[in-house]
Length: 232
Image 1 (tube, rainbow, N blue to C red):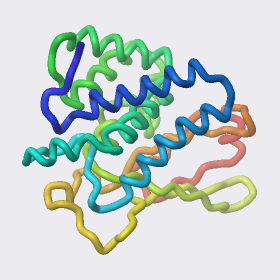
Image 2 (image 1 turned 30 degrees about the vertical axis):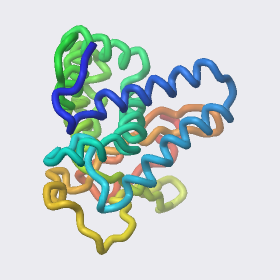
Image 3 (image 1 turned 30 degrees about the horizontal axis):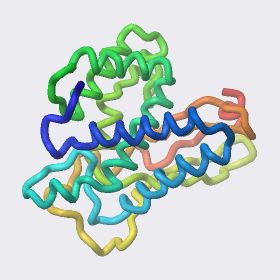
Image 4 (image 1 turned 180 degrees about the vertical axis):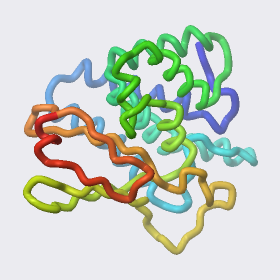
């Protein structure tokens, strides 16, 4: 019903295919083991292929025919699906479904780019009260800004935790990169987000979900109180 405008946005097709494949699998297979194995294999594939300078952003710049074929890879399928799944977790499944329906209705039988998807999600959230103060800085959650960080630059953050004292932990991030002497392709070398991300941290104690906190991209580290984290 909706397809990408150019080959550089093929993740809009194949990432969603991976996302829904996983959703159907989880619906048909009960148990934590099934959930872990299926999701983790796809997730690990994405991490393994995205930690090198030879990777590329999900929203890529296609210059040659060979790059079209190369774009049908783990970045498109596995990372694309993982980013969509992360978006659904941030929004909540019901709001994500509402946003997806809005996107399909708005762009039915048309071609889109990544920006169209993210801005459509923002439109679907405009009347949501939690949306107004659910962003990393306590303000409006702008999915376009968040999504662009994860789709317009390659790589991913290594998140570290350090105990400051009995009530506080320090959370930091830096780009995880193997083979640090290699260079990215010139067209991807200096992304506007400088390899920093707004990172949603989904907190859990045992099987109890404790909500979500943000690691803000504008800082190298955030200090978080342990008790507020545990108490929500």
